Every structure is written in structure tokens, then in C-alpha cells.
Amino acid sequence: MSRARADEEEYWHSSKFRAFTFDDEDDELSQLKESKRAVNSLRDIVDDDDDDDLERVSWSGEPVGSISWSIKETASSSNSSLEGRDSSLQKGSSSYAALPKQVSSYSLSSLFKGRNKLPSFQSLSDALSDTGVKNYAPELRRPKAEYKDYSSDWSPKDTVRRMQRGKVCSLERFRSLQDKLVLLDEAVAGNDGNVITAVLIFLKRTLRREILFRELEVRQVALCHLIHFLKESGEQKMLLDLLRFLDRTEEVALSQYREHLNIQDVEKRREFLKGCIGLPFSAEDTSHIQDHYTLLERQIIIEANDRRLEAAGQSEIFQKYPRKASILNMPLVTTLFYSCFYHYTEAEGTFSSPTNLKKTFKIPDKQYMLTALAARAKLRAWDDVDALFTTKNWLGYTKKKAPIGFHRVVEILQRNSAPVQVLQEYVRLVEDVETRLNLATKYKCHDVVIETYRDLKDRIQLTAYKCKVERGSADEEKINSILNNMQIRWKN
Image (cartoon, rainbow, N blue to C red; front, top):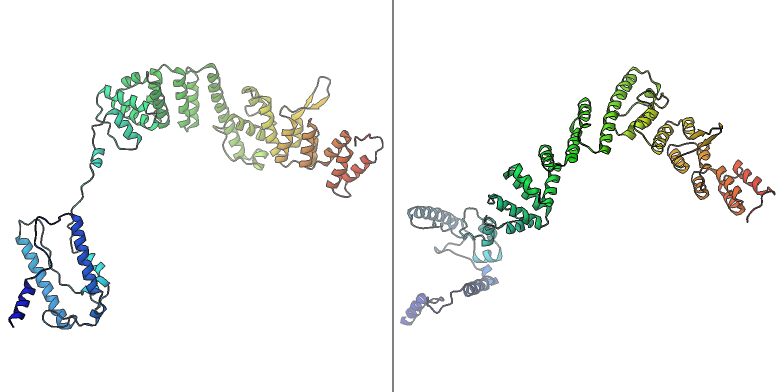
């Protein structure tokens, strides 16, 4: 009896855990190893398959999961949570509130294995994701390198380097003129256009224009960046002030001339262009400005007259080919095409006459021929096309002449679906034999091919071409007649 009592006393006073000594290892690695061994020992206990067959009972001797046990557990949980809340309110000196003790509603085996004996038990993931439990993990501090990004104590060189890397930098700390100029010089030395532009925007905002212009005059790279930025951003007033300060009169005039692009009203644009004629342009630019003003003035007159004729239905060509767009503000070549299309037969004295436009604006012969040919071929006016290239000499003989070359004439006519008879007439006028044969073969001008091989006295090529024409056609008969002609001395 005494021995059993001694064993019982030894059991209750014994412990697996050692008392604290200064020789213990207090590093985190040893604690982690000890915790891992404890969890593994619990897992060995839980993994025993025999405990699934045992009936679990509470301290009161009632089976776990019975109705009476569930009622008692619920009441005990509510009371303990209320007591825990009251005690946490009373302890004002404590840094953290005490958490209420939750009564476990699952066994160790269900906790580690993920199996529930009863459908009302929570799983491990549900228990850990409970929103009612607060997380008291300490907040990690930011690295010191991140706080360094917000420091404003940077030298101009370091600031430029950070801007090149895309870091956010405040330039407001550079207050003196000397610091700002050093910053600009470092940006130019870095050869980064974005950084240079950013620094120039800062200087433009914080310096007077006279000081900024004076300092940029000796810094040509930064000056070019600022001029380009002002042009792209549309700051016309500051751009003109800068160009005047630099005594660039022609650039000032061109910048003012570009303002006409922003004027939508035609009459106001015409008056603006009239005022630009007196600006200090070069001689060549002055003639261009004068032509622009004259062309717009001519377009206004033509547009008003054609709109009236189209509305009244007095012109047949406007009824057959209605206008698709206004001629106002169109280029000179477009205006010439419009005039050749709708006003080709008008006298030279009218503003809308093609010959009047050619003479007024000194349009070259090649440009006029190309434009007039495209317009008349689109209308399929083949007689006008023929008259366009027909010239007379002083003896009265007629001859066809094309400044653009007849091979280009053939291509334009073919794009406008000219008939074969018209194409053949101009293919014959191509001087180069190889080009003439290629065009004639490509566009199936059989007469031209047959005549060219006959003139070349190439019997083999003519015989081979006979297979390409339709059998029994007039072209085949013509080839046979040439091949049977005994007067031709063939080369092969």
C-alpha cells in the first residue's frame, strides 16, 4: 500500500520538462527542434489506429458527443467567454487583452488527421481562419533602404542618377540659381532626354524667362530640348519669345505661319495668311506663302461657284459625278485634278481653268500631264487623252509626245480600264523594244507583239507566240501570213 502511494506521488510530482538553467540553449533553432519533437510525439500517438475504436469520455464520465455533454460544453463555453471578457476589461495595465478560452469540440485525432467524428465539429483550417481571433504577430519594420528613397538630401549628380533609374525625386530642394544650373548640367552630361526635359520643365516653372533664356543660350543641347518641347506642347507664346531672344527671325515667322493650322474658319485663315506675307521669311519661303494665300483665295471662289451650280442642277457633269468633298484647304495637285475633272474645257481666263492654274502656280509639264491624264482617263474621255499628247510642228505635221514617257501613260490607262485598242496605240509609242514587248504581252496587245517580232525578223519567237493567240482568230491568220511571206529575210 505504501509502495503504491509512493509511486502515485512520484507520478504526480514528475515532469518531462526540465527546470530553467543558464546553461540551456536559448536560440530559436533549439526551440524549433524541441517543438518539432513534441509535435512528432503527438503524431505518433494520434496515428495509432486502435484509438478509433475507443470511446472518449469527458472528465465527468459522460461520453464525448452525447446530448448531455453537448449542452454542458455549450454552457461552459459561454460562461468562460463572459468571464474572460470581464477580466480583460479590469486589467488596464496589461498590454494585450486576454483571449477567451475556447472549449475544444474535436479530438486530437480529428485535429491532426482532418477527420471529424461529428458533423458539427470544425476542421483545422476553419478553426485557424476564424475571424473572431485576432492576430497578435508583430509588424515588421521597413528596410532602411526604403526610407532612404524619401530622403531629399541628394546631390545634383545623385538626383540625376535616380531619375535615370525611374525613382521619384523632388527637385524643390534646388532653390538657388547655381544649384539649378548644376542640376541642368548634370542632366545634360547624363545624355538622357527624358531627364533633361524634366529638369527644363522645373526650371521653366521656377525661373524668370529672361534668366532661363540667357542661361540656355550657352547650353545648346538643353536649348534644343526646350524648343522641341515647346513645339510639341503647343506653347506658342513662350516659343516665339525664346526665338526672338535668340534673334532667329525666320524661325519666328515660320512658327507664326504654323498657327494657320489651328484656324478652322476659311475667311479667317485667308486673312491670317495675308498677314503672314509680310513676315521676315526668306525669298523662297515668301513665294510659298504668297502661293498658299492665292490658292486659298482661288479655292474659295471655285467652291462657291460649283456649290451654286450643283444645287441648281445646271451642270451635267455635277449631276453625273456628284462631288464627294469640298475643295477648300486642299493641296495644289488635288485642286488641279479637281479642275481637270470638272472644268477641263473652260477657257484660260477663268479661275477654275486647268491651264490657268498651271500658268498661275507654274506647275511643271510632267506634273500637269500626269494629273490631267489621270482625271480624263477616269472619265474615259479618250479623245481628251489623245489631244493631251498630240503636238504640231511648224509644218503642220502632228506628233505624239509624252514628257512622262509612254510606258507610264500605258500603266495609267490600264488602271482606268482603257480598251485594248487605246492601249495598243500607246504601247506602239514605247521606244524601248524590250519594254514594249513586255507591256504588249502583259496587256495582251497581240498586234503590237506580232508587228515587233516581224520588225525584228525573229521567226522562232513569232512561231512560239502563235500558240498564245486564239486558234482561228484574226491574230493567228496574221501570224501565218507573215510566216509565209517569202520577202522577209528571217534571222533564224
